Amino acid sequence: MTLKTKHQIDLYDRMQKFIRNYKKDSESRKTKEYLNTRLDSFNDYWEEFKDNHKNMPPDIPESDSYFKDDLYSEVEDFYINNKSEILTYYNSRFPEKSVVKSQFTNASAAITSESASSEAKLPLIRLPIFSGKYEEFASFKDLFTCMIHDNSSLNPCQKLYYLKTHLSHEAEQLVKNYPVTENNYDIVWAALLERYENKRVLINTNLKPFFFNQESTLKTVANLKSLIDNTQRCILSLKNLNLPVAHWDQILVFVIVQKLPINCAQKWEQAQSTKPESELPTFDELITFLTARFRALEAVPTSTRSNPKLDTQNQSTRRAHHTIKSETCSLCNQPHQMSRCREFKTFPDSEKTRWSLHRPIAFQSTQPALGESENTALTRFRQFERRFDKNTELADRYSQHMQEYIDLKHMTEVPYSQQQLKPQDNGYPGFYLPHHPVFKESTTTSLRVVYNASQKSANGISLNDSLLTGPNIQEKMANILLRWRLYKVAFTADITKMYRMINVSENHQDYQRIIWRLTTVTFGMEPSAFLAIRTLKQLAQDEDDIYPIGCEAIRNDFYIDDLMSGSDNVEDALTKQKQVTTALERGGFTLRKWPATAH
Image (cartoon, rainbow, N blue to C red):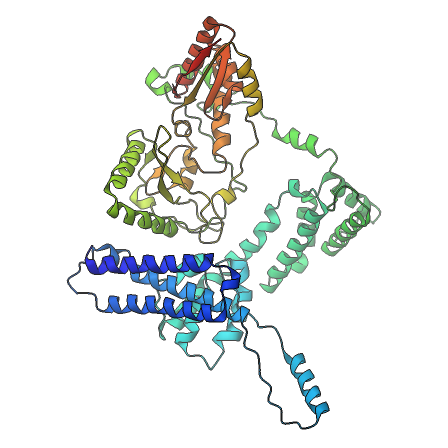
């Protein structure tokens, strides 16, 4: 890195700090003069950066991070996006008022003119930001065409500027590498049309919420109204795509009735039983029935809640019936526990030491509708990589931490042929987790790598948005503490690297990609705590016949990875400690920090 490129990076840092300070300022400070001054200063930063770029010495190698990371394009996008945001705020807060020049001499005429002028004032039409959602493109396209594309007073360069400043997420990434020039407008506009006017994808996008809204969510009148609204919106969108929805009545009726609570569906069937069998129900009749039902429920006075619940009697019974299943071994798929599996018993001890509970991650749908995530992860990585250049100690410790993952086989390299995630109809079949180091000097491990599963992908959906958290199966902290206080001999411990001792199903590991693909449960994801606790309870169940005292403590005396247990005398406490330790070791877990007390 040369002094010239370092100066450019420092200048970019000042621009980012400038915007952060602007966003922190209160509304009262953002006067017209303040905003004009801020815009002038921000423009000066950009002009300086641009001039430096033009005068960059030719002897700087292309391998320099300034060129390798294409910092100029990144700063250009940063400047355009933030300047547009400030201008939008300025125009919304200080709209230009039209001045009406009047030459009338008599007072009544002047009053009439003023009245007509006030009636002619209409609110400004603001062009929406298009994030890349297929279902929103038709509306964005029509507005943009009317306001910008067909505006003869704008040249192509200006049109492209307006277009790029009104794109975000996936749509922004699609055209990110096209600079704002006169020749690029038609190319960028054609690229957007080609991507987002894909009829097959539009059909799938509109059908997905219709088919995958689950019946279990229809618990209130608001949910029922949402079902009606979403269904009608879906049908209208498909009709606009010239699909023959007028002939789909029986399919639509069947799908919607399957989503209804059982008593609501029964009332619909009762209403149909009075009609001749040859007369089939129509979609409009079902919508009319559901509309009348939610209106009737809203009309009933409710003293305890403003959003009355639908009659869902027997729902829990029916749901429980569908969730009962026999336990199967994850090795041979036979109906027995893994600890009783003959195949498992033949394994050498070295292969039993690590507990591999290959549970799939619980997604909210069959495949989450995730957008592209690799670019964001790479951007985050490059940001803290610059910190490594300034802090070699941080770079060394971070590298050691990642090397430990490799040595322990907690992550594995993605084959070159599989590195590029290809989008499918429902989204990308994987996710890149941004990560960064965090220091906590008070803990046993001062450096931790934090994985951000809440980072939004290009379509605005994060991995955590797509995951089910799992039920709360954790023993209450108060119960653990009260039991612990009653023991005459009390001890505590915690599990070393608990989350990293639990494997995730192989076909879901692509949703935990970083530069290397993680193969263990990752801290920071919605279901991580549930998977870890569920694994301990499964281990206790499998080892209960051999270590009953220890397994009871594993079931009841753990709060996440912290053990708080004891006994009434030293001998029993040692027995419990030994059984807990041995049972956990058979699952690959190691306990550490064993303070104890006797009184």
